[in-house]
Image (cartoon, rainbow, N blue to C red; front, side, top):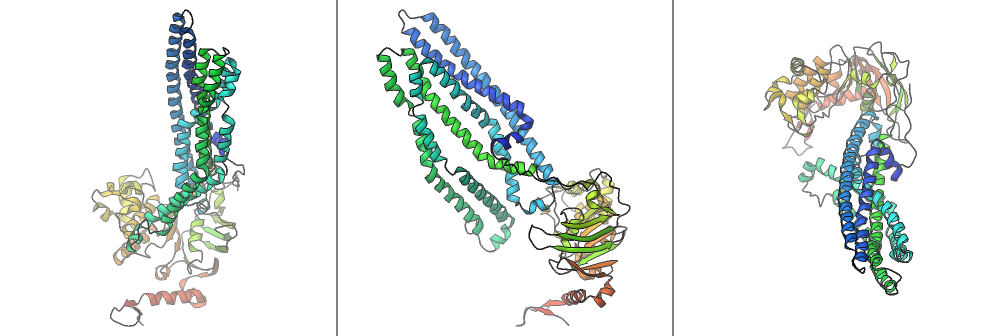
Length: 602
């Protein structure tokens, strides 16, 4: 059996992680950055032309031909600048949208390849934020900020060299405020990593609280709560506001001082430049050049700071995206794996724990399921029934032992082959936003209308589907909210029938059904279980009394196994559970008695 690769230990934040994510679009990103640098550099040409014009106009006599030529040069530079800027913007947006498309597809595909344990350490809000918000930030950075960042780095260097060539004294005066400005920026950015980390944690909390609020809105309304009084949501919003206020108090002053110093270069340039001009050591044209370009030099540093801030804002998102993309997939099959010889399932000393260091949910489970038979799992809540059911299709990976189908370790069966042999009907049925037909075709995309209707008829679902406003083309709401629980369950059974897999895993579908739906579901299940290897999680013991084998679980271990009659005689746990189940069938409500309202009828 092939082993899954370990996730990378390298820090993937900042520019290194960004380079990995942008690898497929490096050429376009480079073209965009180069065009942006060229456009910004061309934007400086008119300033040099204006300075030269001033010298030519005040010459004796005025050199009007030179003024005309400089005007054409300036206009040409402006036109070329807009062409280069347009090219940069267009190429940057093409690259950005390709990156967005590629990253979201890669993340979606990866989420389908990782084991279910991956989701145990991440909330829905965190995954949504990574797939949507973090990817959006990278798209925005590539489309807008990266070209500006390239120009912000290159242009000040080129400008400073050019100004040094004109007059080194005025060039130094142009950057006189830079040391103070950088000192203010250092103050503004102190502990910025920790502050950003705290902000991202608050965003995750708020995302999760919002999702929880909307998922539980019916309970919240029942108890008269609002967004303001629903504790976790209101606390997370208030904590976010408190963080923002505190951040601005701590860091905002530094940013303000930095901006003021960056914009104050004229305070130094005008007196020094005027004094040098009056002494005759600086021409009027050069003075004009420095008065125009000197402030531009420091303003470019402001753009550089914004670019650095943008990199810091997305670096945690880079790490989250890259950590998902580099997470280990389910272990693949070994090269010499053989196909299963039948559909019998064997558990051998299977162990499982949900979190490292936590108590084992399964502690050495061993039992066999012969092909074509029905095996029921029973036991108290938390005994490990659902865990066992989810290990067979590799929704979770066991931490020890082996599960085999037809004599082959399930880890040595290609995942698509394994899942093709298994149908699962869980209690909590999930129906996607789409039509009834689209939800059914998830089981078999090339199914004909005849196959579809035959499966629905066998699942006792065809009649109610035809009664919907548009029949099989009726659009279902989120999670199938337009259907009753029993109707959703019958659609789930129809999907399993349509898939026609030889192994069926069934989390007893009638546990919460009303009498009419229960009868219809039982008929559908009888049809579904024929000639299949069936693993049933039993909630109502009366429904599995005729199973070929009943496995009794307690605390993640097999207490006993056998047929119903045998277990009633020899297994005290099963005997007690059967007694409790029998008693529960006879309870009644008495609204007029002073006794407890649940009365067990003897």
